[in-house]
Image (cartoon, rainbow, N blue to C red; front, side, top):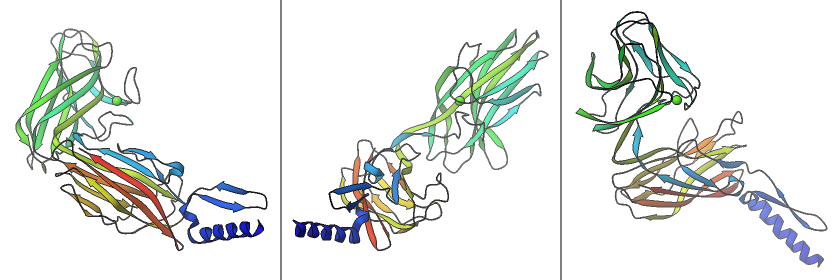
Length: 357
Ligand SMILES: [Ca+2]
């Protein structure tokens, strides 16, 4: 019996010396029984901040990543005014109108921007919020979604929600599209969704600006304020072009390691799907695993150094995925490992990435 135990101890010691980091657990032995002590691995996965759908395995030492390419892109930044109004700008034709940001309002999604004015004479008043944008590919159709509330309008006035698109021609803004819809007071936030059929095709590489706001024609002055509140304004581009760009999973570590990602098994039913996958440590990136027209053309990244983060909120690395397709129903599956090494041992974390159009 004693000899048998000695052999087990010897075998365990050999495993510990050669590859104990293969497991997230450390095995120890005492005279009466074997005990497994859980320990924290020096490197683990965290969920991404992007829209990748990720499931992490036990101890966050494996990751299953599902990415669905989307044919809808939001062209505007901070469309929801969630934490502030940046980078939206404000313009008005009358100094009695001004705008301010509220962190929340009854029934709102996060912050709102209020366009407000005490109207003291008849006349025309308008104010807009503006933001520059570009398009990733040519289009003459955009879907606009504006959520708003009209808290107050001047008595004896006509009021409109106005919106439009200007193009920068190199020296000035030129209006290429505008429209409007009637506004009345609303008791709650109201959605206005419409497809913009533009008279010209928007082109990549050109700067456009989107604007929306309120227009009030006060034809007989009786004091009352104008109070228009915007909860969000989205400009969505929908097309037969499907794409994803973002974090697939985050990598956190407690000591310096060198890491790479490689694929050992690849399946595909795709003929148009392209993907680029690499590791990023905030200051540099690896070479990429690449899929071109559904075929795996490069199966491994280069190595990258991952250092312990300077504070717990900082993540030392990420797996980044860029992918696109021009048809729906295609998919690829990459099964591989995140391999990392430090001090002479190598550890392999299973990673499966599925990308669908
Ligand atoms: Ca909002």
